[in-house]
Amino acid sequence: MEKQVIEVGIQEEDQSLIEQIGQEVVEFEGYKIETDLQYQNAVEVLKRIKGRHASVETIRKGITQPLDEVKKSVMNFFKPITDRLENAENVIKCGAIAFDIAKRKQQEEEQRKAYEAAKREEDRKRAQLEAQAQKAEAAGKIEKAQALFERAEVIHVPVSVISKETPKVSGIKYIDKWKFRVTEQSKIPREYLIVTVNERALLALAASTKGQVSIPGIEFYSERIMSAGKA
Image (cartoon, rainbow, N blue to C red; front, side):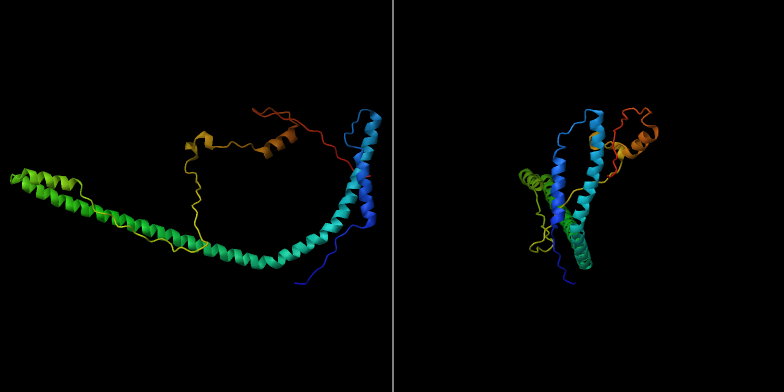
């Protein structure tokens, strides 16, 4: 990329013009129009101000446009590599997130199976104790039967803790960002709904009818705008 040097400065005549314009417009702060003559003079001045504004913009753009061109050149130089970097980042992120989700689902599934296995073992041991208790009861061994029934009630098999987490890497963390999707809009409570106004349609109707129509909840009105040419 070719090195470019830009000198930024305001020529003396341009600086003098800007200072002169600044002094000219100070006198209009708080300006009021109260007579026909003041109105005629004011609109003539307005046209002159529009011309002054154009002159200032020409000076400003003469300084900023070269800077804009340099910035555009720099952005165009870096864009291909930044696009590739962003694409690579997105691909890796999507792959890593998919892997993390799969690991969590695997852990949840294996944990569920471990819980069910522990539950089956509890049921087996409980049924075994209850059978022994019923046998002891039938044999007249009431105390032994009672003790076996009590053991059956509190039987517990620990659930194995399954650890299938995504490997920890310094500087990497996952955040669950909660969102929503609409399933049945008609069932959504009103406090979660926003009623929007079709501004484009109403503005078009106001312009085409000059406000001579009645819309419930809508008031049409006009604002006076002045357009001035340059002197």
